[in-house]
Length: 479
Ligand code: UTP
Image 1 (cartoon, rainbow, N blue to C red):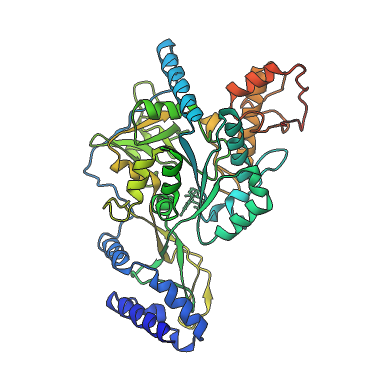
Image 2 (tube, rainbow, N blue to C red):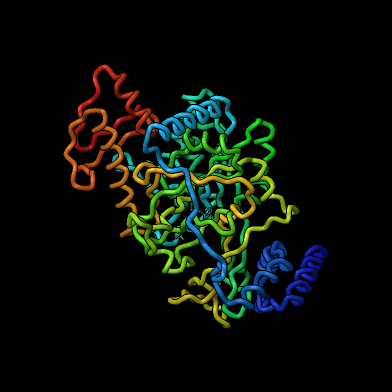
């Protein structure tokens, strides 16, 4: 009882000081368990820091972090090879990347803590069935890519998966049910949360005794990693690089020798993968250069004049689309995750529909935005990197995120992109497959990452087969 009283006093004092006592407005009708739960939840919020964030939001009342007076230029990047010299550079990078993989100096990190609201799927997005024939989940696809790499490079690979309070237990259960897809070194790291506020800056409730909290954005990766013991594991294993990607993209090259090699060769702290934006209005952040440093500007923040600007060849000047694929040096990752390093990522604000309760405690499911969420974005780490590079990737080969239930970036476009890519490899290997103008066959096929997860390895393996199987609708190539 004494402990509860002490906790209540401390929390009330804090919330009183920062004008957030509305959080306890149902206190008198809560039972003792509910009071304890609310106090604990409230006590975990760093209200001093959060209040600064709220104040600066209310002062500026703007969602953009971009100052219109700052000159923005397109970021330079290492383009895909186009002539003999660049082919040689890419080949050198590949060999270096392979060497690092053989030395076991790189771990994998997947950001999977998002809420996946647009997909409208119950459960963690990583459990979503994504492949065209077998319906493998996103997590299984990545797991198989990692197993392929483990076998090829002869090293166990450490895989860190960032979850959030909303999907942590379900994610662990899913891996448990699937025996971690035969991987031995999978770690689940829970990211932090932030409270949602209403338009007046007041922290919202989702229930009489629960504050409306949400995951703090993929930029929460750094702090979650350090707090979750990730750095200690890397140090103990002599790993100094992290291959980072987001859970919604089954085509990602989980461990790409070219990309790893370029990262190492340039002594980069943070490397990023770009693909060409399809059209100016595409909802994709772009890599820019601001005062000589690379940055990503979200599509909502890039002025239309820039977004539509073309160069002499008629191609978009700001075309370097952000894929959310990076390689980090583990020291840099650790530095950003260190609470006392003074390197805090900025928080982006988004007006959202936030389920809450009214003055009588009745649940409201709003139809229009009624509150603000704050999120840190991984790419903002670029501002702290003294050395960073951007490397082009072939969009059709590495990027098909699932964001929406239908339309663009949906399970259907993702299926088509996978089938298109598998067909391309098979056609390169000499198979006769009917393709439409977009390179898509009129049927599904699937190639397991356990067979090969990229064209180069696929062709080697396929050509080694004594009798490659005939390709027909529904063909699955895998062990
Ligand atoms: P998105 O910005 O697409 O968000 O995240 P989302 O939560 O998946 O989907 P919506 O916006 O609610 O529809 C891009 C990637 O970053 C991860 C997601 O899991 C996804 O892999 N992410 C996002 C986190 O890990 N944590 C977060 O707090 C937010």
